[in-house]
Amino acid sequence: MDKLVITGKTPLKGDVIISGAKNAAVAILPATLLIDGVCTIDNLPNISDVKIFCDILKELGAKITWISENELTIDTRNISENNAPLDMTSKFRASYYLIGALLGRCKNVTVGMPGGCKLGARPIDQHIKGFEALGAKVDVGQGKITAKADKLVGNSVYLDIVSVGATINVMLCAVLAEGTTIIDNAKEPNIVDVANFLNTMGADIRGAGTDVIKINGVKKLHGNATYSVVPDQIEAGTFMLAAVASRGDVTIKNCITKHLEPITAKILEMGAYAEDLGGDTLRVWCDKTPNKVNIKTLPYPGFPTDLQPQMGVVLSTANGTSIINESIWESRFQYTEELNKMGAKITAQGKTAIFEGVESLSGAPVYATDLRAGAALIIAGIIADGKTEVYNLNHIDRGYENIEEKFRKLGANIQRVSEEVAKDE
Ligand code: EPZ
Image 1 (tube, protein in one colour):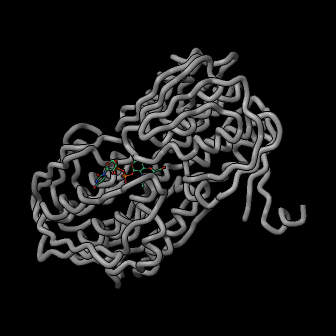
Image 2 (cartoon, rainbow, N blue to C red):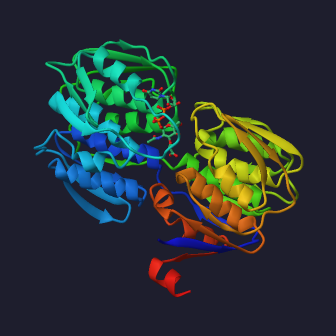
């Protein structure tokens, strides 16, 4: 088992360049299945979720050519399969986008039940509700989902909860449907990015990023264009919070500062600093112990659940007692047990956790329980006294490109140690 070995206690200083957004990339890749042509995608993050998606697309008959580490072309003219390999799709959550995309293209699809981070119950009833509104018949059972339609016809889709995934999935299903689909739901940046990608390839989607998305079905997506994936809001937020947690001074490049406002607001409330330097660059710094703050995670533009664990590390050593309310996922406080092993004083119960700020954390062996928990534990290791070992790196590698290299460039003492080397120690 690989591990990250981190020796604290380092104030992070310097520049970091943010990669393309994981959660946009994992929707844009299946969206290419709607195209009858060749497209180029750049600013793709070099992460394992992207690699798995490319493997699935190849199994379906797509031709993928890598131009560089972060850019590829996809030729989807000869898609020969509409049944995505069950063992591959059940490895990660975003495989649910294959349902919307293949339903849109082939009107018939089977995929394995989506896997992904264990954050509590992760139903897809709202996705199904949307597909059904457009005329599909959906069956779930024996670890797979099958969706079929004679034809797809646009409709008004009312989802019962705010869902990023369901909004994108219904959008994918509606792009080639007859007539107009209206979705009144989430307005997160990754949804806007997927809509922009599809429009670049010939779709007619209006209003993404506002309360109401209107999709006028088109007969064909032509491809024949290049699209650059939006910068990762969550990766940028991870480095912003790492700067505050380590009492450092970090300049974050290639980020969309507007997307980061919910995080910037909390950083300022804690008494740390954030300055928009223009040109997609944000400087974040902290020269004293941050003040306590209370956080409630909410759909965009609220504070993102995907930065809740990283914020938890900041609050572990803040002045006073802070409270986090997690309103999106049931089980997103598993990381607090790991932080407590490092000397934090956190009491988590249900969807609430109370953080009693301590003076400092101390290094310990800890286990990433999911992707963002993993990022939080790296930050904890960087600010702790002594040596921290972070295990279960597969979670972290799913969503962060070159994470240890980026932290190392900021001054962190962090090494990836492979199983063989670890055994010899
Ligand atoms: C996306 O998940 C992200 N994943 C998650 O990021 C992120 O935490 C989440 O949005 C919220 O921002 C991807 O984009 C691949 P939702 P998604 O549908 O779309 C409930 C990370 O760390 N719900 O917006 O699956 C659901 O249980 C990951 O990068 C239903 O009840 O989330 C949750 O409570 C983790 N029925 C809430 O809605 C449904 O059909 C929001 O989920 C769908 C969702």
